Image 1 (tube, one colour):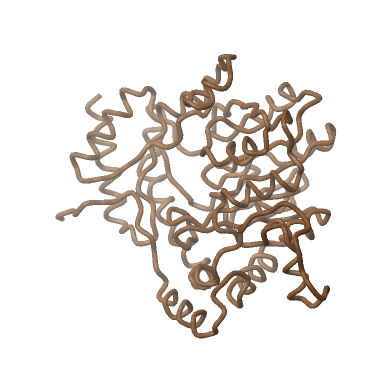
Image 2 (cartoon, rainbow, N blue to C red):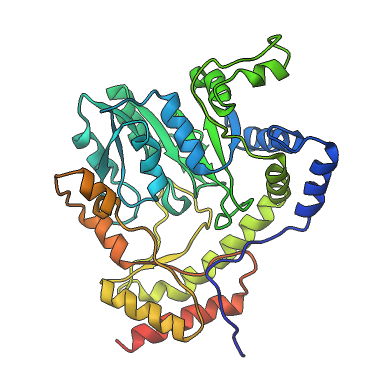
Amino acid sequence: MKFMHIPFNKPYLTGKETAYITQAVESGKISGDGMFTKKCHQFFEEKYGFKKCLLTTSCTDALEMAAILIDVKQGDEIIMPSYTFVSTANAFVLRGAKIVFCDSRKDHPGLDEDLIETLITPKTKAIVPVHYAGVACDMDKIMSIANKHNLFVVEDAAQAIDSFYIGADGTKKSLGSIGHLAAFSFHETKNIMSGEGGMLVINDEQFTKRAEIIREKGTNRSAFFRGEIDKYGWVDIGSSFLPSDILAAFLYAQLEHLDDIQNKRKKIWDIYSAELKHLANKIQLPLVSEFATNNAHMFYVITKSLNERNGLIECLKINNINCVFHYISLNKSKYFVENNKVVIDLPQSDRYSDCLLRLPMFYELKESYVKKVCAVINQFYSSL
């Protein structure tokens, strides 16, 4: 069989996106909080039990809103993993916070929950766990630490749509529904997407009213449109965080097909797992902890060295397969090093930066192509 180029990602269209966009345009209301925005909010609140949802223009914006809501000030300390996207840190740095990086687990790129308490000081304001690859951090442990030290928890659930945490008592909770606040992404690389886009989830009702104000440029405009006040004005800080209803229309078409998309992605993930499991003594494969479910956001392999990963990438490239590495540890970034004089040693985070490789994962990826990727990886390791 002749194989064409296998890309890392290909956005999937369900077929209704343009029809819903047209419907939004013809409604005459294409700015924020139109009918499709309301449909999306209702979908998430009913399906996943989120107390309040607000679509945003990006996950970055949702995180920035969270930082404002928990009133981050100059000198406050925020604990988060170093192995994450820069937005996780930027949102809090913009409010003057000091970022305190936690190393990753040995068995998973998520933060090591057992290290969190050693990083807490009187200046600590919040813990920001990142559910890497859509796989839950140990939220019982994190919430227990947060409650003990009176800290906020903001879940970075950018990759975690339709993924769950299973508590010690067996209760299954949607990721994003456990912390005080949570942020999701609908970037085109995510399971459900709208090109760009995000969502803030509010689980602590003390933040609900202010979140609406911050999202609407610091005005009480939302209350005005509900008829709760007779005029609106500037009452708080804020920005324009709400997306056009055109984006929401696109997103809603995706949400209607969420179960189908998830089932297909899980089948692809399972093929990767079955085809590569015999290499478990040569490469580290993805972990789905006993307290987590798998939303098949990504399938990755972890090599034993940077040189080995470079060799594997080149081998895949020669075979017309595009695989990519992921984050560079933020503690090694130019910005962080220039603004923090203390050298931080985070061996696990650095290991994932050097050795983790993401394999192609998208709805329309053919089974034969998945097996081709695996065959090339098997060939590479048989030659070592």
